[in-house]
Image (spheres, rainbow, N blue to C red):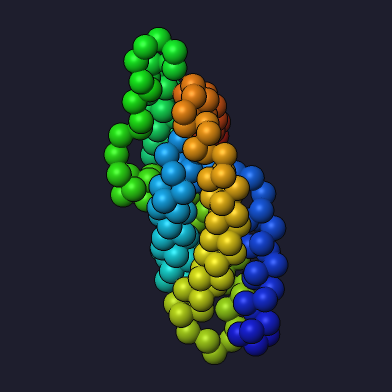
Length: 212
């Protein structure tokens, strides 16, 4: 297998994973609808930065340790589950504290700059053990013989980032067209409630699979 062949084959695998709606799509959608396209892009960049870190870690063997060590995997799973539940609960709490439109008080916007959206995307990706397991299971299969594993791992992660960025950019553009209309109503509160509820459920399900 040549390097171009490996990149194309990995792109086919990563492409399927990319277009399946998941946590990344939900986070970018929420940031765009409730805040702006710029905040959605910030979340997108954080997610892709996490993808690059996982790709390089898999190529360097760090992710292999995660897959081989049950304790390491469980610790990361608990941390990821706790983070998802905390993040979801924070969104729910914020949405119920926000006053509804029509009571004579303006609906306050969510606080925090774009850096917060970036960190949210980055942290969520890095604390997802399933991403690490995916990379450690796939990266070695697409490293041609004689090619530097670290460089190839970074290249494969780069392909995944390009695909993910293209998909999530479409999400940002689509959500950004309706976001301004929704932000002037109580719909923002419901977006946060739905997103927060999904995060709490995902975190609880992740925690339920762990037995320390």
